Length: 268
Length: 355
Image (tube, rainbow over all chains, first blue to last red):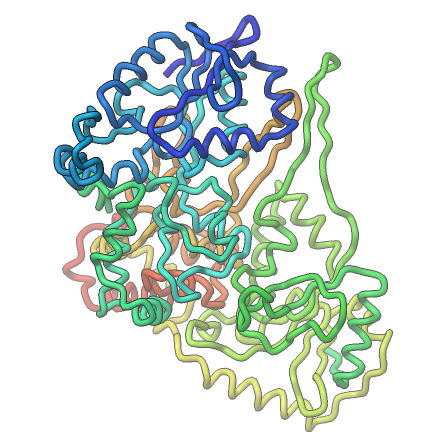
């Protein structure tokens, strides 16, 4: 991890790999506060908002996932040309729903989607950029939370290590006094998902889908155990009955953003 | 103790009188989720529901908010400037159940001891508290932790009787507030009716401990519950909901947040949970409770052993919020009874004192 004290105004750039570019749009939602941001950095490359290219950067913000061979070369080249690399959003940090493609082998997936044009694409299994090159700062989220982006930005500029929040979304639900999603008869991944979003989806009447990825010691086994008929909480009982929920449904839900890695789980 | 009675019309007048000069917070049905209640700002007395179940978030939030700014800071050439932020306006908190009153009393002990948490004390002095008697649900076990009839630190306490409420007036502040409306001296029939209600309430309690709450410290101290903690840890999400809805948990996390100008910001504190992985993580990377089973074990030992030894009371008021909030079904009363059962039946065969 690189920590840096900048002697002059750092040159920053934004890049995107396979993604919806929603994380960059989120940063743009700073609106006139972008001017405050630009008081600290000189933005020399940002395809979504400006023309112009740079070749050396102090800070590179990258969103998106690595899905083609050429992406590997490109992210390595960016890594070589920047002092600090910050992964923005879940695609760049944990592979996000791009990685749903990894359920099939590349040849099958490419033919299924592109048919006779399959040969035009040089696809490889999906990885977040953090699995290809070393990343200095990382913020998950789909999209990244603007508040967290500002925090990461502040940490980079003031030369501090950034530790992403590692508590579950339940923390933010309870602190905001939101009624538990399970009480409303829906399944929610809040208990095992990294917080930092302010429980945004629950605030708007939805459930947590786990976009920020699992917390470091997520007990995903417990999520399955809670569904077992012999030891079901009254609220769980009502939720399961209402949704006719099965273990497969739950596994699918858990796999959308950050599939649980079995060997690392189950720490008691 | 003085007893008076008040009609519903006069109680509403009292609330109106309060609203004229102060903020009034009381249980109100949630607009986003009917059937659920929360302590909310009241603008008209008819918004209040005094016969509510349990709120998700306990009323301690009025004295110790889920997240609060401790001070704002700005760095300039002249150095750092700090602005402490404290709200000063007095307020009235109405409709507090006996268990939640007991929790505020417990926190007065924990946060009031030197070095006192001045924010807690400051906010406590701002408030007049009106308690109200409750109807237990399936998660309540106040009968097991001596909070069934808690009154402290209420300034007034209401029990529903025919025609209105029986009012207990434990403090001078309560008496002063009540003098603004017409009340009547309570007769023996009112006291009897309130007593009958209390008996009915006790009979409705389904969850209970097998031992008195004071005995639990000894049970926990005898140790040897490794298998129970392991089993609970296999089901615990470590989501912290139990702590975050608890009316007596008082651990918090402190951090700084900067503005985009990088020269000003604020320091805040927010409710924390001992069930979170990083709760006991310290500089240098050591985690005192990195194992989930140690975190689970800590919760029971903190509430029923450590704090009991320090303050002479258990830090659980039987409100049942944690048992309800835990969708993994780790139920406070059930766990206590398992511990008691284990200590009674397997004292010979149990391993050492660890855990």
